[in-house]
Amino acid sequence: MGPNPTDRAKGGTKRSLLTDGYGVPLGLAIDGANRHDLKLLAPTVVSIPVRRPKPTPRCPQGLCLDKGYDYDEARDLARAFGYTSHIRVRGEEAKKTRRHLRSKARRWVVERTHSWMNRFRRVLVRWEKRVQNYVGMLHLTCALITLRSAEVLG
Image (cartoon, rainbow, N blue to C red; front, side, top):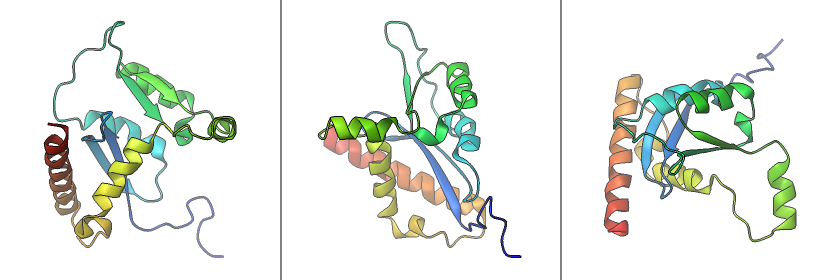
């Protein structure tokens, strides 16, 4: 029969990352690679270690998500956490890039931070059997990225 076609029997670990506008990691959650991104949204937002300021109408806080989060549940979660959601509708980004060739995707900051994390070989391939050890290495990686960003940003 073979593996289940819905999850494609993916092995490994999925990282869900929340960053600020400069790519500094703020929140992190991990789960199995066969888990849908939507299921990691709430744990990722809850994992922010510092208390964030209350959003106001004058200073709203946006949550930019890709088209994998194009569900009402994601919009409801963003609203419950006090974020203004900016979720790409499926097919919208392809149309926009055809019209505006120089426009960048909204999530390039997060993708760049994932790339920075992948430069740490210890995190790129998960060798640890215990989740706590892997999460500790991810937190150390995020701390180093934050330190390097602070040096660059001044």
